[in-house]
Image 1 (cartoon, rainbow, N blue to C red):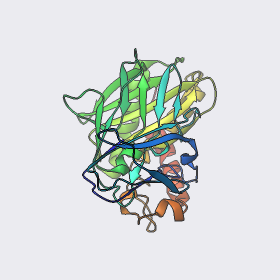
Image 2 (cartoon, one colour):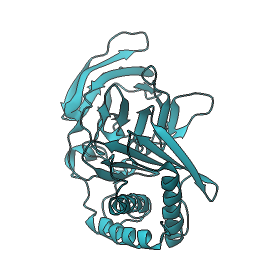
Image 3 (cartoon, helix red, strand yellow):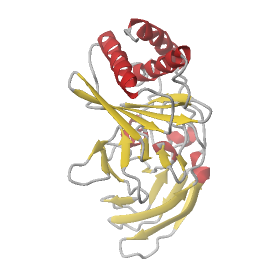
Length: 303
């Protein structure tokens, strides 16, 4: 992590305690190891923890501060991060930090894949001419854009000339052609309900696993874990499509249409919000999305 242009006596680096889409305290900071901070010259900077998820680096008005740390990532779920020798799934809230009080600053994320890994899938915008580099306008976008890295399969379709990607990690009994057709039908059925598409591209991050499952919505992507054999028989496959429709419609409901109350946006929260508050409860929004999910799967001419 490189912090530039923030000239202060010290920098408070904050790691979130919950993740967008899953409103429960998870204490991601407990997985951080080997934290260190240096000047650009390599000279070490003093630091201390001032709270469970805050690292104070005494930057002494250095214009460029380099921070390194390791994160334990071996919990397979849509809410956490996971890394093994076959792929990496990065949930931003469980890995990245931001400078306290400045979560609105733009961010460039550089991903260096493990040798032999050739694909990166995420809702973040790629930086042209700089392979493996992605842009986030603020920490909101970074934390709300999970990343899949490895050699996964990627399918693509367009709706109203907007690209939609289906990232598939793992082997399963799916039919790629049918997935493309049915995902397109879900998007086609959902968009007229609200009347606009609020993204330039959308990514479905799907992991086909031996067991377990779940889904989590994001600002222009969705993370979905299912059994690798979920595509047969037909009833199981339709339940999967129902989950896809649910997570997809959340990009409007809850993500952009939500009740009055505490904002879920990092950039709109007061300094120290992560420490003092629990995440908001948005159960009514999720229930509305669930009802819409049923409507979408019935309206979609899925065959």
